[in-house]
Image 1 (cartoon, rainbow, N blue to C red):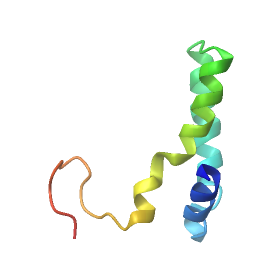
Image 2 (cartoon, rainbow, N blue to C red; image 1 turned 135 degrees about the vertical axis):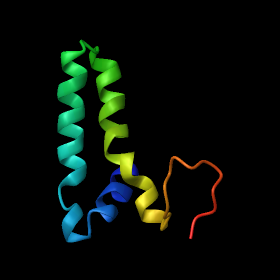
Image 3 (cartoon, one colour; image 1 turned 30 degrees about the vertical axis):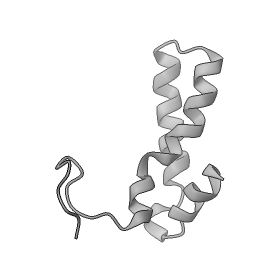
Length: 70
């Protein structure tokens, strides 16, 4: 299901392949940090979900916690 959500976000042309690129970059960083295989597997599932809020229509600055979103 998580993979389907990530792929749905990529239906917009500007996002195509973005999740795969982010996952590859995040994995390279994790390997450089010496993460073990179990931790890396979990990370591979989580990395593509970093943009999950974009699919919800959330707008505004996410750093403004509690601020109303238009």
